[in-house]
Length: 212
Image (cartoon, rainbow, N blue to C red; front, side, top):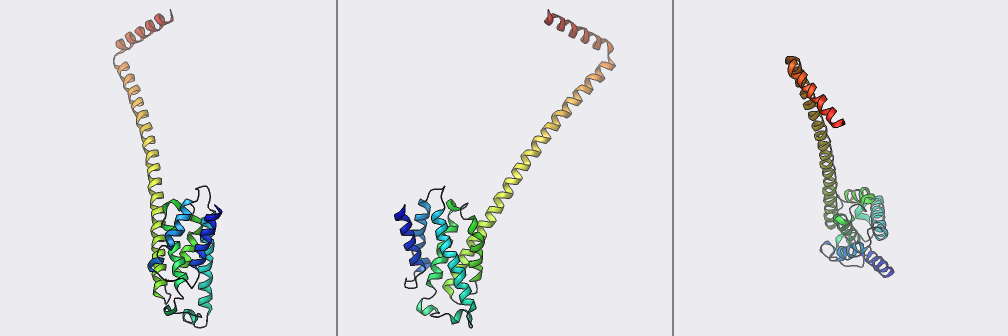
């Protein structure tokens, strides 16, 4: 487990290093991180917490620093696409997207969803196209996941409510049938006293026979 943890640490260092080259959608970096996170037992979230606890604060802080510059994003030292200053943010956003796409981590990722929305929305107007593109893909995944979660909850609630209503209706129908049967028996007895007397005598005889 320690070797896996060390490997994750080295991948996160590479992710945030400006010396790392640029590849479309970060090449295999996101898949490398996900292979480690998927290997973690379901009962543990330590590696996921380290990953998101490293990337999300870094994204939030770098955005704050860039916006605080007198000239905004353009005044960031070493800024501009020409010298690949955008690479760490692109890699971090792409890894976040991979994590949010993975269904096996759905429950574990709930505490990080709000910060993921923040880092994605903050960079939608970034002057660097690779950063804007990565942020847009993260936001798309988050919106789809949120709507899917809400839809599944609505369907589940509707199903439970429908089952409860069906059982109540069935109970009410049964009671209605019993009431109608009793009322019909009373009407029959009142219209034919002789038949009612014979039925009562037969019932008493049957009861006596069973007692003896």
